[in-house]
Image (tube, rainbow, N blue to C red; front, side, top):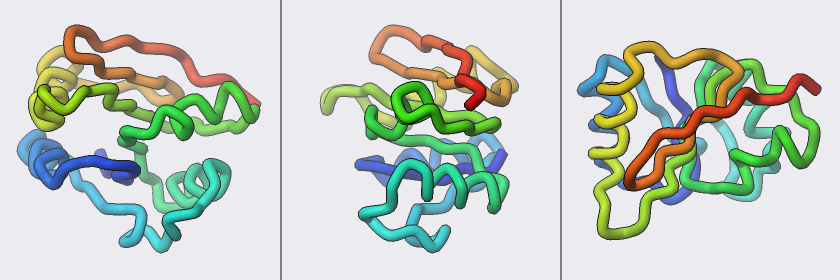
Length: 120
């Protein structure tokens, strides 16, 4: 899978994705500005055929709150500072070998929750 990394993610997240055979690029590499709206981020990810991995809950909930369509995968890391983000990525791919499209995967320190994304 190819991932767009958004929000306050450590460089170890990209390393963890690569360890699992994925590609990762930042929002800057995708041509997005820091102040890009969720609609602009989703449009760029669709155009570039990227899944989204974010630490920003506002971006992850935008499809529900703003009625935005995103047919790809979103992963939200809800990890406090004492838990390593790369360990959370390892836990996600240890549990789910293949992620489904149109789903929001929320990773907390103890679980991985899955929710279907709405169709706008």
